[in-house]
Length: 285
Ligand SMILES: *Cc1c(COP(=O)(O)O)cnc(C)c1O
Image (cartoon, rainbow, N blue to C red; front, side, top):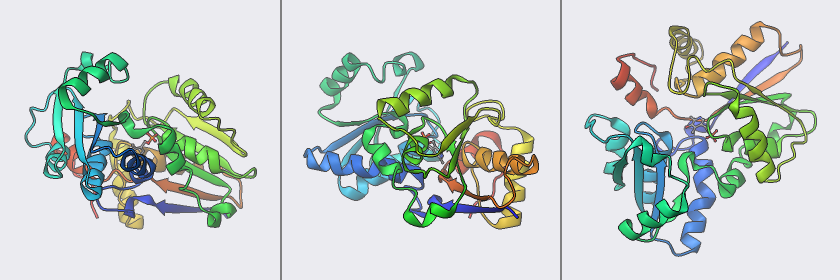
């Protein structure tokens, strides 16, 4: 017998859901400690991170600025509208300029223009974020043999890798196309001094066309999952992760007796924008 379980990090908060809450937690505490008044971060126009940062900043009484890749033209974009409603100041920049997002000269220029801020990198991954994602697994999760998470910038995978036990295997399902993530994750783990006690693997064949791309097979799977289990998934991250686990189950990757824990990292706010952009309806709770 093999059992699949889901850890519903999407239920942490309706707006600051899943791993974005984990990644923001210690950054918000640090910003407060430094007496900062404003958070600044980067993201795409449908980014869960932008939405979560805007909401979290409002709750803890900080201002927030979102630097958005590409144009802000689309008035109907529900992610940007919600971020704005939460008080976030939005600034759209060109895709070229966006590549400078970690460049210190560009950041100094932003400080001149917008005032002092506490910087949270794109995707939210930094040392304090990994401290937060290390808390996803609690002591009660020792009896799972496998854990599975989607991978974007890798901060969630890194935190889980930091907390798995010797008998556990962590599977990361890349939401992006390409093998580059293997080397990037190696670097990230090294930078943060993470030496996983258990085994880790990164799966790159479940991207369904690339980041924010999809196949009809993926969309059908998301609907089937909702109808079968009453759990909503998003097409960017959690849908691909659950699809991968289901596929690996069919392919007998998990040995009899395995207890597999899927980490539902949230991201359901993005479903509204996905439907607006593509016309494809998705289950929503
Ligand atoms: C941002 C996000 C991820 C990716 O997390 P990383 O720490 O950047 O790898 C996964 N799932 C959801 C729902 C997200 O919003």
